[in-house]
Image (cartoon, rainbow, N blue to C red; front, side, top):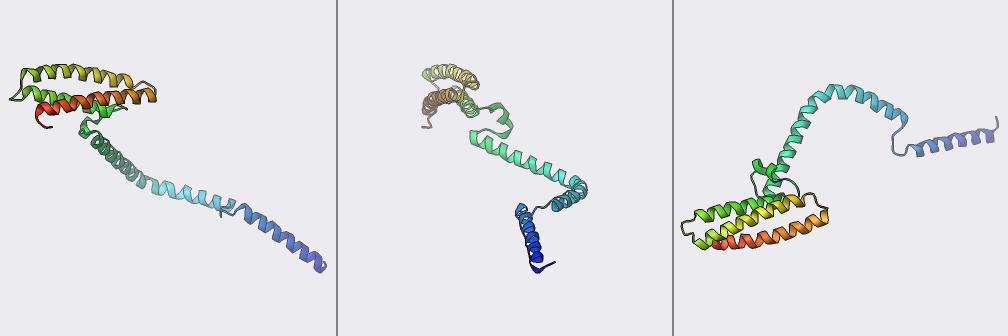
Amino acid sequence: MTKTAKTSKKAGKAAKKAANSDEHASGLTPQKAKNAVKVAKIVIPAVGPALVPLAVRAAGTVREAYDRYQARKIGVPVEQLSEYSGHGGGLLARIAGAADGLRELRRAPHVTDDDVSFAQHAQGTLEQLTASVRAAEHMPSTRRKAAHKAISSELDTLESELLRRLGVA
């Protein structure tokens, strides 16, 4: 072989090697992939049973933290969170709180006939608002948001009057 033939043969090999290295620029070659699969077949059955309980415990902790966050956000105890689920959960919690306030107003020592009349009227309003929130759950999002905004506005008015009658505001 002549010197030029050897040089061209080396150049061809270098070009092939460069092309192969470009294909595997990420560092993952077929051989490395096969080795990784072999290692995984050995390691996962050995380590998996030890990691599963840890993963389950971590998932439970994350879920518990999320539930506490949701309950705090709508202002109810974690135990009652399931009662106030859905898009209108916060509104339902506010309505339940207003209903509790009306019971307190009826039991107040300084209650007047006007306060009792207000409590009866407000109780009917709260029942209508509860039905509206439940009906809005199945509406398209834009209509549901508009309904929730109207319900929230009505609830704001009722709550402020309730607080005034309780002597808080």
